[in-house]
Image 1 (cartoon, rainbow, N blue to C red):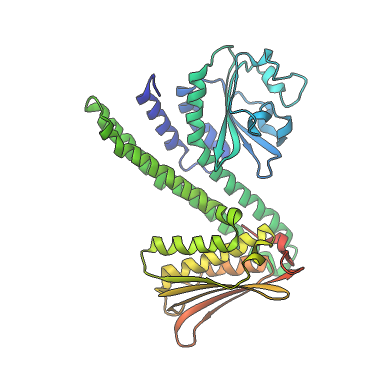
Image 2: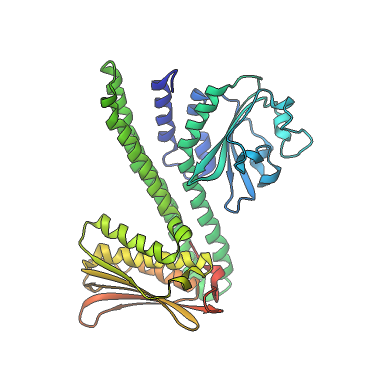
Length: 415
C-alpha cells in the first residue's frame, strides 16, 4: 500500500462489494477479475480450491480458459503442490515456460506451456491456519511481476479467503446432503425428510449469501464513504483513521461469525459438550436475557466417539432447541443433559419457560428440521410440554453399536 494506498484500498473495497451475494465459485471469480486486474494485471486469473479431504483441488478461472477448470485434479500433481501443502509461502516465476519448477511433460503443468503463461504469481488462501486454496495471476509476457505484486496479491488473497471458505463450506454441505439424501431415498419413509433437509441446506446457503451482502457489504460501503470524506478533507491524521481501522476489524469479526455458523469448528476442535456449552453461552449472551444454564451428565466422552456426521446432526438439533428456548420461551433456566446407556446415548434440552402452546411461534420448519435430522441418523425425537404449562423438554435418543462408536445408520447424518 506504500505507493498508492488510496487507490489500493478503494479497489480492495470494490472487490468486497462485487463479491457480496455471489453464491458459487465461478460467478465469484468472474465478478472480482476486473478489480483484481487494477491491482495485479493479468491475462489469466484463477482461484484454486482444495477439497475437504485435502487430496484434490479445482480451479475457477477468468480470462484465458485452461484445462485446470475442467476437472477435479490430485493436489500431488499440481504445479503449485508445494504452496498448497504449506511448504512455501508464495511462488513467483519470471518465465514459467523456462522454470525448472514446471514441466511440460506433466499433465497438471501442461496449461502453462499451452497458453504461454510466463509471468506467474501464486499466494496461499488461508483460513484458521488451513491452506484452503491459492490465488494465481499470470501474464503472457515474461518478467512482469515483482515483490510488490506478490505483496498486493497477498492482500487480495486475504480478502477473498473468508468468502471462498464460506462458499466451500456451503458446497460441501450441499454435496453431502445430495449423497445422503439419495442413499436414504431408497427408504420410502425418509424420502420426504431428505427433501426437507435439502431445502433447509439450500436455505442455509442463501443465508450465507444474504449475510455477506446485507451485513458485510453495508459495513464496507460505510467505511469507503468515510475514507472518501477523509480524502477530501486534506491531510489525514492517525487519530482520524482509528475509527476506520476499528470498523475494518469489525467487518473481519462479522466474517468470522459467518464462517463459524457455516461450519461448527468448535465441535470439531474441542468436542461435543464444549460446542454445546459455547452455543448456550453465545445464544444467551446475544439475547441479552438473564438465563441460568447448565450441562449435566457424566457421559461427555461418549458423544466424542460418534461418527462426525452423526455428531454434527445431533449438534444441529441441540442448537435449534437452545435457540427456540432462548428466543421464544422466556425461560429463567436451561439445562442440557447428556446421558449414555448400554446401547444408546441421549440428550435432553429442558427449559422452564413458556410451553410451546403459549409461544407466539409456528410449530413449523425449525421443529420439522429437528425431526428430519433425527430420522436421518435413526434417532428418536420427542418434544414435550410440562403438564403444568411451564417449560418444554426436547429429547433425542440415538442407538449406538459397540458402546459409543457410531449410530446404527450414522452414514446418513446431515450437516
